[in-house]
Amino acid sequence: MTLACAAAGAFASGVLDDNYSADKTFAGITFLNGTASQLAFDGVNYWSGAGGTSDGILLAQYDADGNNIGFYENGLDARSTFSIGSDIYIHRFNEFNIYKQTSPGVFSAALTLGAGPLNSQSGVTFGGGEFAAMSGGVVSRWDASGNFLGTLALNGYNTQNNEFDYPQNRGLSYWNGYYLTYSQGVMSAWDASGERVGQSVLEGAGSTFDSYYSFGYAADGRVWVIDDASGTWRGYSLNPVPEPATMAALGFGILALRRRRRSK
Image (cartoon, rainbow, N blue to C red; front, side, top):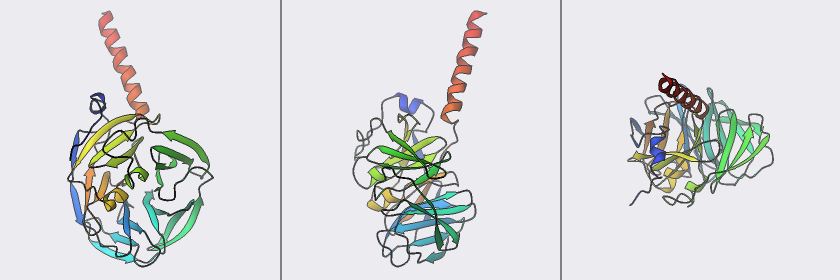
């Protein structure tokens, strides 16, 4: 398999390292009736919903070491699992509702996203005070109250690593001011204007149907990908970098310093 990466400037941006190795792994439970949909961390435990059906066990709970300590029949055909603070949320198939966990395995509708493009298979994520979802390189955005804010096109999406193929074309996560997408072992970072500003190879990360549904950033500082339906969760710690606005300010500061030095 040949991995295509963006032209030289993407790696030089400092947004992502060229590659990441998994620094935490653990065995995922096998969802007999569904596909794992991301791993969320509430500060104590990991949680993973599952989708493809509304029946059977569709939520797994793991302790901080990755030991399975619970599984639940919650009736939610999940397309994404994410955290806001210490709370766990699920977005399910073909809905605008966001469900909040009120006790282990018990969820209730907490918020409804306003009218806007939302593909039935897309997974909603939260970051930077906003909800977001992606389909085919177009990101839909909502504020924290669910009001629709508009769409953002990811420039150059569909040019590398079969990223436009299903199901990777409906997966989105958020980290440190950047949107994240994933396809064929390569993670891309996109800024708020829709430019691809970084890419990285996730070493050993899966490229299965389950892998693409599971890709996401968790509050433990890692992006997670599962190998397959009964495989291993692999977590990749991302090195913190300044958010885009901070990077711009730093750039102006460095430029000013150079000018002062030249004037001496």
